[in-house]
Image (cartoon, rainbow, N blue to C red; front, side, top):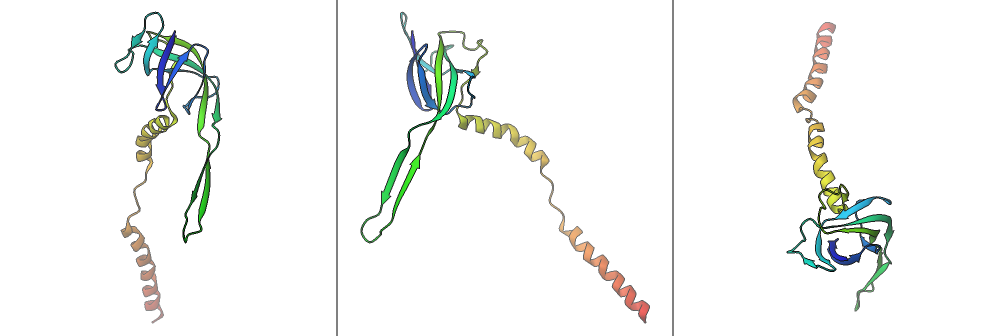
Amino acid sequence: MFAVLKTGGKQYKVQAGDVLRVELIAAAAGDKVQFNEVLMIGGDKPVLGAPLVKGAAVQAEVIDDIKADKVITFWKRRRKHSSQRTRGHRQKLTLLRVTDILASGAEKSGVKEAIGTHAARVAAHNNAAPAEKAEKKAPAKKADAKAAPAKKAAPKKAAAEAKE
């Protein structure tokens, strides 16, 4: 039995026991995650989703977070400009081992859904936003700041009158 799942903007054909390198997901090594976006389940009775297979899931265990090979980009401006730039990038990936393919009953499995780090950051930001708004203090009023110097001026006038 195999399944075609979608994660990180890519599609993967997987079987139980396969090791995958997918875009970084919000999970630590040793965690068990579940991919709910299954496009197709193949085998004796293939099921094609429209667009997803309802109730189907692929469960996997996180092995480690790794980095892909370095991709080097080089720009050079020619003619009268003698500038050039080299830049490297290593994409962060998650290494997974597929443990099980569920044709139905994905909602009741109790395994955490695999979500990308961007989605996790957005969810955390939206949950923290109401608390941050409550903690903000009101700005100090300008009238209070101007009142303090006026109080100092009054004793000087009284001292000047006392000298006369």
